[in-house]
Image (tube, rainbow over all chains, first blue to last red; front, top):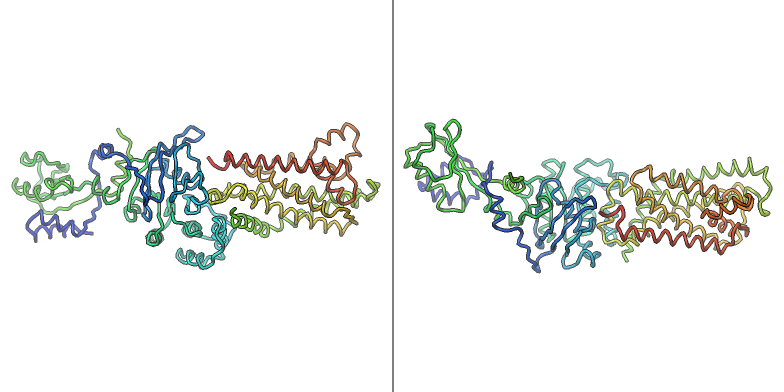
Amino acid sequence: MLKVTDLAEIILHSGVPGVALSILRERGLRRTARRPRPGIEQAVQRTGACGYARKMDDIIEISGVSKTYSSGFIALKGIDLAVRRGEIFALLGPNGAGKTTLISIVCGIVRASSGRVMVDGHDIGRDWRRARSLIGLVPQELTTDAFESVWNTVSFTRGLFGLRANPTHLESVLRALSLWDKRNSRIMTLSGGMKRRLLIAKALAHEPRVLFLDEPTAGVDVELRHDMWQLISRLRGEGVTVILTTHYIEEAEEMADRVGVINKGELVLVRDKADLMREFGSKRLSLRLRRPLAQVPPALEGWRLELSGDGGELTYIYDARDVRDGVGGFLDRVRDAGIEFTDLGTTESSLEDIFVSLVRPSK
Amino acid sequence: MNLEAVRAIYKFEMARARRTVTQTIISPVISTSLYFVVFGAAIGSRIQSVGGVGYGSFIVPGLVMLSLLGQSIANASFGIYFPRFTGTIYEVLSAPVSSVEIVLGYAGAAATKSVILGVIILITARLFVPLKLLHPLWMVAFLVLTAATFSLVGFIIGIWADGFEKLQIVPLLIVTPLTFLGGSFYSINMLPPPWRTVALFDPVVYLVSGFRWSFYGIADVNVGVSLGMTAVFLAVSLAIVWWIFRTGYRLKT
């Protein structure tokens, strides 16, 4: 990650703010961000929802799926979503948004009230055997048969999916998840992290083409989480499509190719992660002033600025895509206004900021 | 048909029985042995023979049925209820396994365990009293049909129950009384006429009577009726199981 001092150095050495900006872009600057640009929700509404369009390369096609539980609770409202073959798709949403219901419908655990789901061209209702045989599911809860051994439980799952025993494959899965040494242990003796890995091993026992991971790293320590990210990347490398729900936005930011945001049973948007970050993220350039200002000078009116309470920090909020509003022009105006600064730094919206803005209740 | 899945569920359930051998096999065998001591030796020695069969021998088919019914229900209900309770049922529901295959796996394993138990009890009984087996094939048929039927009943209870208490209610409050009143320890012909009529409404009468006939050739009701009633119970149980999977009752929301 680029430091503030690097930024100052680039500006000083290049002498031209516009050049400095392009250098920054080349370096792939990643910033920790604090605040998203206001008005994201309106922007989402303008750009429309999810752009569902059936393609041959879509391995999962969900069209018009709704779910109303017998209690009357509407969990899903007409979801349209296509997941591309071989991608890592992150489904984000607050608790109760409908993520698990949607996954459960695709996997055949919950019945949709209406709509259609196809898995690699197989309808989950009419051609359920072939559709389900392609799917592996890692549930959110640590649901395991406490008295069984690790080896028996993964063998059981493989058998359920109609496959003959394949000790070589099961060994490779258990080794990849660091469970080989525990193969003869009863599940009740495993730690929480091991149980989580075991659920992944069970989901991989029948060599699925689509893997659903419902909160895969909940309650998992940092090191193990990174191991799992590596495993998921490796699966993607082998052509497995991965759909994950997560509360760790960092996880989606780190791994996902595309992101879908679901809220109150509706799919708010689906975007390539990079596009999402670019489209909805905002940047902030903060200047630590040599002399505090009582108010924003008239020469800088028209720029989106915030002045800190003590007048010692001036922050410029801008859209990185808009060349006209770039930092170069702004710094020129600052210099013309005779404002001196001792330090500067930039921040950018994280996926988390964008996510929070999208699901925040409108006031 | 996904035979590998049936095999996987069956093996899984049989492995559970091996882990809980005390509860599944040893405990019923000890209980049955105690019945022989109490009813066969202590009380039976004061009772005349029934239909020309010594009382100790007479009660053997009834005792086998008593264990068969109880264990079939207990094994099958626990087998399907426990994955529901722990949540591991998700993998069965999300696997390419049909309802028929699920039932074959769970109820098939429960019935197998019951039949094994029935045979063990017969061997144990042979140590206490003389046994005569006139119709061995019919005996096997009644044993297997009853085990299968009541394993299905157990499966239904395991789906219906939403707590361990409910899991026990049906066996304790319905099946055990019906078994005791169903002629396990006596011939219903020994009852006064009104009670004999009432007993004919007890389905267990037909199971015990048919099973006893296969041993000694004596029966409270015609063996054809016994066989027919057993088939009816099986059909009713199958219909309920079919309805459960069709509607997703207590399995899918």
